[in-house]
Length: 218
Ligand code: HEM
Image (cartoon, rainbow, N blue to C red; front, top):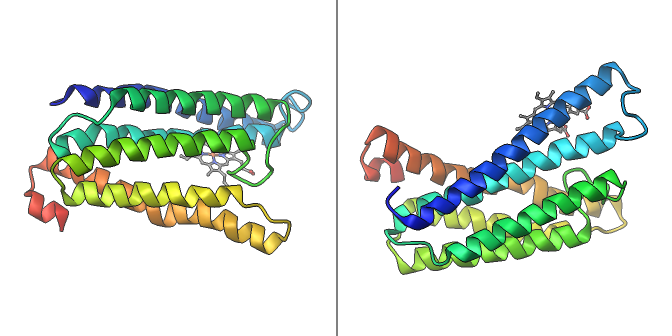
C-alpha cells in the first residue's frame, strides 16, 4: 500500500464480507425452506428470506466496487484520495440504509420489484452515497495521472450511478415498469459492471503479472 488513504478500502471489504456471509446464510435458509416449506413460515417467510439473500448480494458487490476503486485510484492517479472522511461517510450511509432495508423487510415493508425492493428513503440514501462517491473519486482522478484503467473505471461507475435514477420510476403500466426495471438491473449486470470489472482486472493484471501497462490497457 503506497498511499495512506487506500486503507479505507479495508473497511469496505470487511462490511462486504459480512454481507456476503448474510447472503450465504439467507441462501441456505431459502434452500432449507424449499425442502421443509413450513420452516419459519410465520416469522420469516420465503419471499423475505429471498429478498435478504439477493439484496445482500447487490450491496456487497457494490461495496466491493467502491472499496476496490478507493484502493486502486490513489495508486493509478499517484495521489491521496480527495477525502477519506467522505469515503467513511459514504460507507456509514450505506450501512444505515442496509440496516434500514433489513428492518423494513422483516416488518413486511418493501417495494415488491425484484432486486429493487428497498423502501424509497433507502433508495435516496443510495443515491446520496453514489454522489459522494463520484465526487470523491472524480476529483481524485481529475487532479492526478489519468490512465486507461481510471478512465474505464470512472465511465462504469458514473453510468451505473446514473442508471440508478431509473429505480425511482415505477409506473402502473406493467410494460413500462419492466422497462425501467431493466434499465437498472439489466444495464447494471450486462453493461456497467463489466466496465468496472475490466478496470479492476486490468489493475490486478498489472500488479500480479508484471505485463506492460500498454498491453493491459489495450
Ligand atoms: C450456499 C450458497 C447459496 C444458496 C444455498 C443459495 C440459494 C438460493 C435460493 C434458494 C434462491 C431462491 C430461488 C427461488 O426463488 O426459487 C436463490 C436466489 C438467488 N441467488 Fe442464491 N444461493 C447461494 C449463494 C448465492 C451466491 C454466492 C450468489 C451470487 C453471488 C447468489 C445469487 C442469487 C441470485 C441472483 C438469486 C435470484 C435468482 C433469480 O431471481 O432468478 N446466490 N439462491
